[in-house]
Image (cartoon, rainbow, N blue to C red; front, side):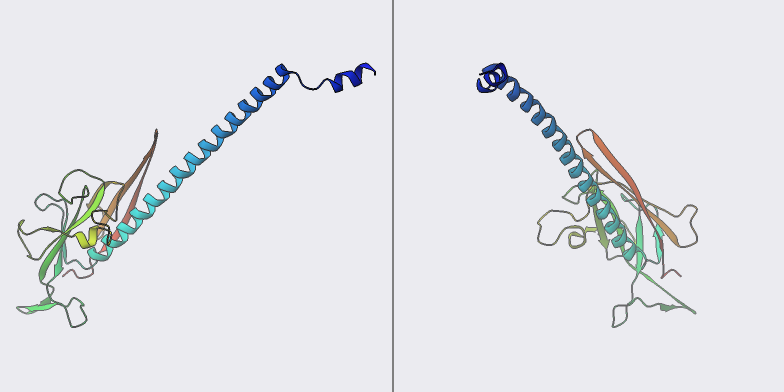
Length: 208
């Protein structure tokens, strides 16, 4: 038997096997680290996309309400925004004007406003969007958190619109009877923080 055949016949030594297992382990650790990083980034991207989608839906819902408003008050009591709605509707639920003296115009009725809070709906700091309603046309008493609008159906205390770090309403620089609604969504995953501002310009269609 020649030398080459002898080397082939002796098999693998224990040291060679240990070195092979060690190298394989290092490769697996490196690959698993890459896969975990990809998974974390995918989860973060998915969470970020969901937060942006929630912010867009929240803007759509607020715009749908605000569009019916007669007037907008930037500061009213403890909240930073108040929209007055007409007090008269027809048989189909459409807002209609009323005669005031010689003028035909919308008369203020109920009011709505929006703010950020926690799951309780109590005014204060938080990242969950809430709406309040008031059946009276004026005054700071009588505001009630609108859980039907703010909470997910059948969820108990889970709000519909989360991860919102800022909410503002402004008419500065806008055309007459137009309100700019801005929300900022924020998502934190480990050391990564993502923020994005979303906006809607809403025309008060029932203004006088």
